Structures are given as structure tokens and as C-alpha cells.
Length: 326
Image 1: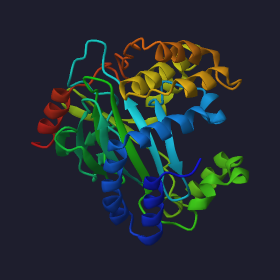
Image 2: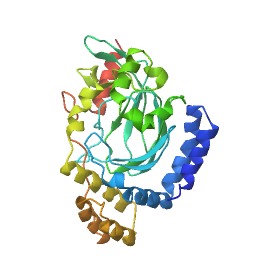
Image 3: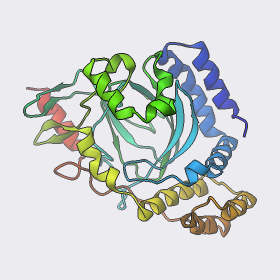
Image 4: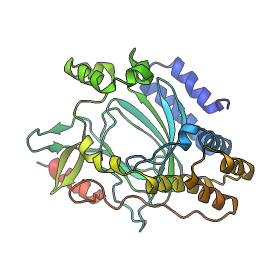
């Protein structure tokens, strides 16, 4: 299938604008155009559901349900789907406070209530013994207030569960173009990823090469303090959560979103049903689409992997107030 016009425009900007912040700034208007174009959504749905790799994808609770849009060595585009809690409560965090290392992230709230978010100052100070952390809120807003925003490289932020199914179009790129960027997609080097990372860390070249820091932390409030936890430890339980139930949950979310976006191409859905690559668990959701039966909501995790199991906006505000008034 031919690349849609929006992706072509962003590819052109990527070629013309080496500065990554400026690239994101110029691209954000295109993300908005994408989100408002029904043809774009139909194209994305069909591209993914005719992609053998997407159909055979093994989902885990570590992932946000998504659609691919485009990827090359310099940037990638996806659609992320965010779901509410079963009781639709606001002000409860979907995950811990985190950053994306050297990646810039532009987000456009394309559908639904959108989520609430906080951005923190980047000069994070961690006590290596107690793991107590100095964080300070820089900005706090909802996606209704600010539908398009940028999360900078190394900038801690947190996503608060939305009150209804929501979708964002996201543009990711490293904070600068590096001669090593093409190595990320090299299939030969991927096979030696672990030993290569070890060598890069040993030589202190992680920032120059543009890979995640050896120790990447997530953060959460506890007793009016911010505590750091290694990212690998935080995500270990959800990375391990996979299998038939998670696959079904993820694709229910995908088809529920397609239905709410008004996707109606019965001929395409019938062909998808007959495709030998289409997993069996897709069929009930395809049937419901064909019969115009409402696909029920899916829900966010009730707890996250921190000692209290839950983190609220007030917890974060209180820790921020206490830590920064010391």
C-alpha cells in the first residue's frame, strides 16, 4: 500500500530539518491533520490488519494496545490506545513516573477524553543508598487543555488513566541524528544486542551512541517522598503477563476503538475473517463488527507495580510540595 500523504510530509520534514526539536515542532501540525482525517484511520486499520507480523504479534501487559503507522531509522509513528479504570475514576496514574531516555515524544490526543499528565524538571537527583529522589513538577495539564504536546528527552512525566477510551498519535525520535542510528534496525547486530550493549556501557559510550542508560529508573511517591525503582524491576511483572487472555484483551481494545471511530468496511472484515494468518481469537470481534454489536470497554490495570499498588494525582502533588519545600 502507498504511504499516505501525511507520512510523506513527515519524511520530507525529517530530511529537511536536522534539528530534532524543530522537526517535532513542524510535524505536530501534521499529526493534528492525520487525526482529523477519517481516510487516515481507515488506512491505518487496514495496513495493520493485513500485516502478518501484526496479526501474529504476542501481546503483553507491558504494552499499550497500538497500531503501527510508519518507522525508519530516524523516527517512528504509532497510535496508542489508553483505556479507563473499570469504575472510570479520574486522577489515578496508569504507570509510574518515567522518562524515555534520549527520545523526544510528540503526542496528539486524537480521540476520547484524553489523559491528564504531569511533566517534571529534568535535573533528577537520586540518593544511591535510599533511592530517595528529588523531582519537581514543571507542568500539569489534561489533553483537553493541551491536545498537542512534546515530552523532551530525559524528561520525567506521568500518564493519568483517562475516563474513557482514548487514542493518541505519537511521533518518536532520538534527540539528535547520529551516525549509529541505522544500527538499531540492523538484523545482524540485533542478534548480538546484549554483548554490544555491555561493551558500549563499559566504554562509557551510551549517550554518544544514543542508547538507554545502564540504570534507567521509574519513580513513585511514598510517605511524601519520591522513590526511584529500576525500570527493569518495575516492568518485570507486566512483561511476564502474556498469553491468550492478554492477546484477547489487546485485540478487543483495538476492535472496540475501530468501532467507535466508525470503521465500516464489511468486505474488508470478511476477507480478514478468511485470511489464514488471522488468529482465531480475532473472529468474535470481527463478528461483532459485522453485526453492529457494541464491543464492550476494556479496562486499565487496577494496580501498578509499586508498594502501595496505586498512585494518585494528590500523592504526587503532596510529595512534590514536601520535597521542594525542604
